[in-house]
Image (cartoon, rainbow, N blue to C red):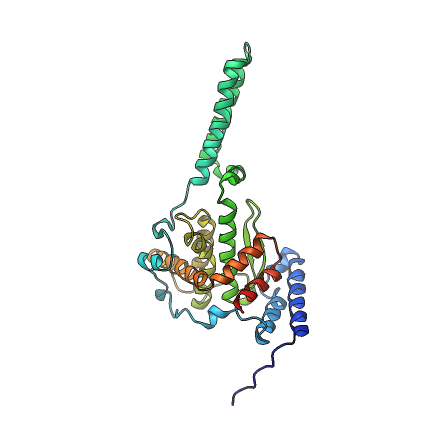
Length: 318
């Protein structure tokens, strides 16, 4: 016997549901980190999203899960370079190859920022100053190279700041984080926050969907497939628009942490297959939901909160 369909929500009921979602997200973000990381901490957010979905106020949440990716085992998670190309990735060979563009820009800027003043100082400054200042500026470059070869992480803040001069830096970050946000929402994993701040770009996912912190416990195939796609969606978003992927290092680290927690052992070849497959699936989702992706990027670029970003996705869906 079929259950009767729920009547559509009235505008007042829908507004109340959206307000409840905003309140649940705010309450979650106000929790201490130790409580927020618990798997059950976000049950209120998940319940609010499910209520919106059940009332047909939203249509995109968990839509990709309902349209199964046809994964039964880890062996089903594979893709060829040609399939990545067909999915829209401009240069599949760039996947897994760290880009050094940001570091090169920083080194060129550092060299010009010391060499030019040093040369001018040598000609302009009188006496010993004409020797001391160029010598001091030359030492700055030596210090930078020394730190870069021994503790490169210490230079990351400076590298990020210098690369603000790259005209596509902010747009890359926006496309990248919007890719994570959209695929997570489509796969039924709620997003509770994001940041596009330089050096702090991230998208916060809710662990309530799997009932525990994402990077704790063993992951079954369904969990691994969904979380792998979300992890690589930022790379997919960049790969659809650029020849190289600047933000893939952190995504690959996240993916490796997920693979390390798979219930089934994942060998090196399977890791490569899953990386390609997850990127392909992310690219397909972004292309299929191009309108939602564009609307989400517009909302995120304006700094709108998570609830408003979700509404932007749903407005583009309807």
